[in-house]
Amino acid sequence: MPEEVAWVGPWLVPADEIADPQALQLRSFVNGEARQDSNTADMIFGVAEIVRHLSQYLTLEPGDLVNTGTPEGMAMSGRFPYLAAADVMELEIDGLGRQRQQLKSA
Image (cartoon, rainbow, N blue to C red; front, side, top):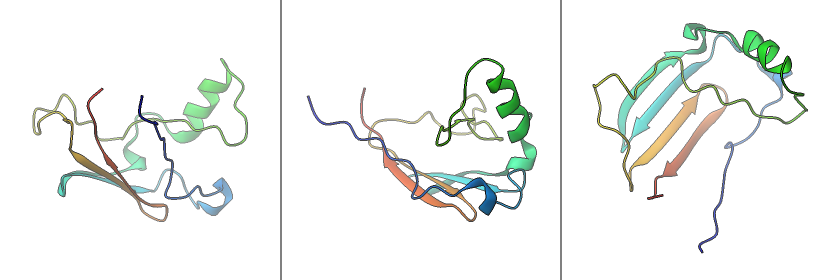
C-alpha cells in the first residue's frame, strides 16, 4: 500500500498573530481556475462561536485543527463540476499562505 501523507500549511500561525479571524480573505482554485473568493466575515457561525460550541462536546487542546469548510460553498452550486482524480486544488488565505494538493482516486 502506498504511503499516505497529510499536509497542513504551508505553515501554522499562532492565533495572537491574526488580528481578526473574521476578516481573512479566502480563495480556491482548481486546475488554475478561480473557484472561490470569499471572506471569513461571510461565515454563518464565527470562529469564536464554532470553538465555543465544539468545546461543549469535546476537549480542544493546543494544536487542534478545526476544519470548517469555506464561507462560500461550492459543491451544490451547479456552477462547477465536482472535483475528480488528477485535479490540482489550491487554497489560499491572506497572511497565511497557499497550499496545493493533487487529488487521487480513493
